[in-house]
Image (cartoon, rainbow, N blue to C red; front, top):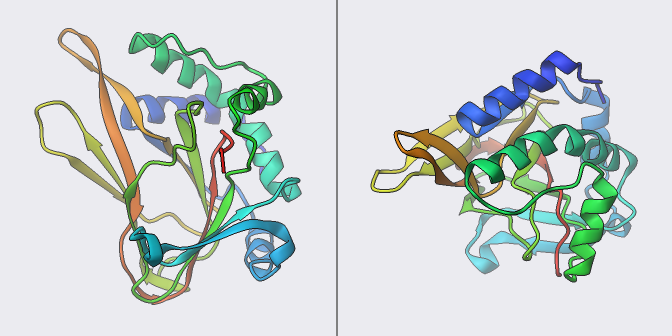
Length: 233
């Protein structure tokens, strides 16, 4: 995992504030990505497998990791969370929401536990030809962190075609805006979990956001989702 400098954190925060998403290039090296893919079949690592078409979530499969998480995933959560907290708390203040997130990640997980949210939410996703993910939000209980991440484990245009990452933004009394990105192997996309503030003529208002994946045309697409809050089940 590549260390991120202070200037990069500021650039990331600026992009989140302006766009609701930010891209970190080459955050993870190819060997680390390959290792995560190679462990996809190791049932001992996972607590739950979801076949997406059974629930009309799309076409594909994802698996939730067990605690303790693999070292790389744990390190990503612990490293990114405190650097994202200032953005999250600023969003809450701008929108007039009383929620305040602690700087310490362990303290935030204690808040989740107090609400019965004790299951890990980090997950690995696999899509084959025709695979896709419908627009959704990753909320697993009353306690949530408003920013999450996705790590791209293989290379678009080489290992698969199609499968773009899609964000939609809905603001009051307007049509939805679609944002489509296609990161490279080892990149991390940081994006809003469910809403973000946008400044209008009368202050800030709430823009709701969802995310999904467009149809994969060929090959297999692997990603790793990192969500900071825990789940009820």
